[in-house]
Length: 102
Image (cartoon, rainbow, N blue to C red):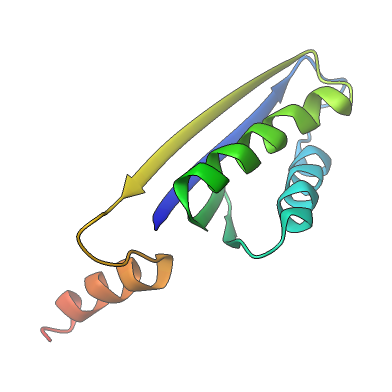
């Protein structure tokens, strides 16, 4: 399982506000179904099979074009661990255990 962070930024829009574009991208993600995600102030974290994640990110990348954006910049970071399961919650819990000395 992989954890992927994606940030999709439409360029060439009529407004400086991007929240409607972000909402459309998240609707695309939700329609895929079965993918866990977390919206953050600077991007979205998703987890699952890497091949599935890359397909859904492609669809999310296309969404601002469908909504009229003239240009879209997408940044992706992937954490793909093969020796044991990897989840968003597990990554956070590991750091929190270290903060508390456990």
